[in-house]
Image 1 (cartoon, rainbow, N blue to C red):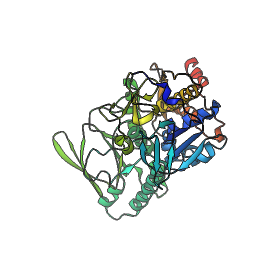
Image 2: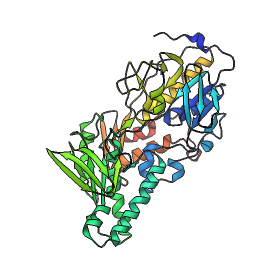
Image 3: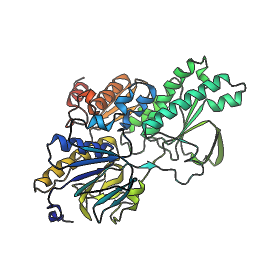
Image 4: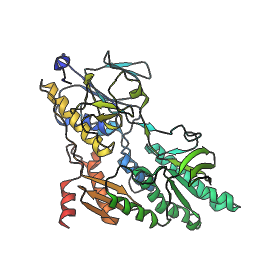
Length: 422
């Protein structure tokens, strides 16, 4: 569908960015770096940006909170971007307005939708109320506190059954988040339990996956094999249970079905990493063109066909011509591309189709252990894989501490050159 650029010819146009995830934040930073004169307002309900790939490192203490969880005010301090910390109650596409929870509203000429997804529980009884999420920094910190309390109680528990439940950690979902978290906990929990003079052999980490494959969506079978091997080679071997369908979750107990039989896990910790649901605000938008999951279909320029003044990226959108995986590296590049197109349009020029470069897959597979698949050709594992992953994310981290250049590539050429020349 052709875009009518006359919609954009308004005086003093402004940009409103709804959601400060990778797409929204990097769109704002890139607009500033490009010297775009459009007034930009970024709205997010949290005062801090969550660098989600480093949540595992935040949990384990391998990075400081300010790296994985920096404040928007700090990130935007050297820009002209206005940050508003508030919840968005309504997006009115017809009247080009956004209404906040306090009743205030913001008009816009251009809108960037970067609203991330929410945890999806698939209607499983008790799943939402009796499990831990792992999506925000608060989630990681709360989980860490809970696990340390469980370990302390286990060290003091008088009975074997009570101790076993405290020491059993169950993760639902074997995608990248579940696998990375399980591998991290398999190294981390024994270290924590040592402080209470506990026997780490009593700790059990279980991963339940409803189908027969881990890391679904990862194209490299070799990378999956590396991950499977890593789960078995941690200080605590991870018990991976495939084709296991969770039936219900109660306090202290999880029910699942596998191999034609019903099973029960007595556990004080269930972590939900099983999938995403669309943000309620995205679900409520009067947009007809969506995929089967309800995500907004976009043009190659990342504009909505029905509302060409609106751009969308990240978990809430999918490009009709070529769907990209909903990963941080894709959302980051989408934010940069949206900013470039807004800068073009502010000068009366048409936006350009974007091109996403998938340069690799990075996984954390334990403390100071990782795996990196580069250009779908090279797999690097162990400590070298950890170094590549760590260097990559730190180079991308949008914080003044790192003196980040916002235009940095997803994985720095220097890092890749060292690997390819090795």
